[in-house]
Image 1 (cartoon, rainbow, N blue to C red):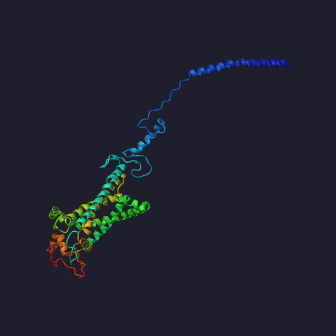
Image 2 (tube, helix red, strand yellow):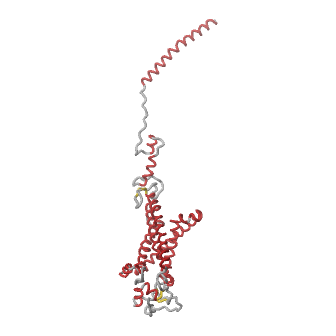
Image 3 (cartoon, rainbow, N blue to C red):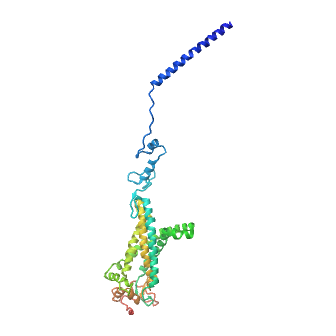
Length: 391
């Protein structure tokens, strides 16, 4: 019985061993047939990048190359190419401004072009012009001293400026000084103040002066309007002004007769105060965003360039005006401080105006306020004037 079981097991093993190669051959044959029947795989070829690719397409063709993103940033200022944002407001989708061509610099995006105009032209040449003006006036005073023989220390004879005119003038002058000092520090302070007082103190000073600048601006605008309206009638050019210019205003010899204001004073009124002053006020209103308009970066940059140019012109002209009204002409400051001048001063500097006063065409006392001579007498238009001393 045992021998029979052993024999059966032996025959079973032999049968399995004989069948295994046949099954393996069959499986191999089937696999080969399936491989021959399957289509050949195609080779994956990456698409060539194109200039107009989107960021998603470029990420597939050249992973890691985000040139389309930066190209969109660069062109966001061009018409119709601004980005899509959820924040309301003008230029919210513009990251880089469009290309512009400002005078004196190569075409560039507006922000960089503005920076180059300011740093290469306005600041260095504006600062140089201010320094040249101060140096020229110092040299002139050193060589010539104060002009005029009369010191305006005689009896007040003619009211040159009424209380209203003096109030408007001094208000405008005070606002201008605040604006001028603060503007100079903000524009040029880092060159001559920052190295001396250090960054911390300079930062506080610049912030304080910027605040003062913003508050003095409206006072300057209002007082400038009043000054222009008050003095414009006496600053219209006439034939005597051309004669005054032809003789250089008496700089090289005797004083040249003029009316209430000579040609130089009229030039300062128009080209040193009225025109640049109005430009400064208009551009300042834009910079402070006080006008009902949509403010774009390009508009603000142009307004700032106009503001700096007008400010430099006004500073240069009015530095000369301040010089002539203080130490440059004897007796001039007293005339603006008190409003009155004596007969000798009036005849020496503004003979045509003084002759009109003596002839009764212009009142000697236009305001009716008594002169500061201690007499308490307010002479009328028909009051006798002192004789004019001979030169």
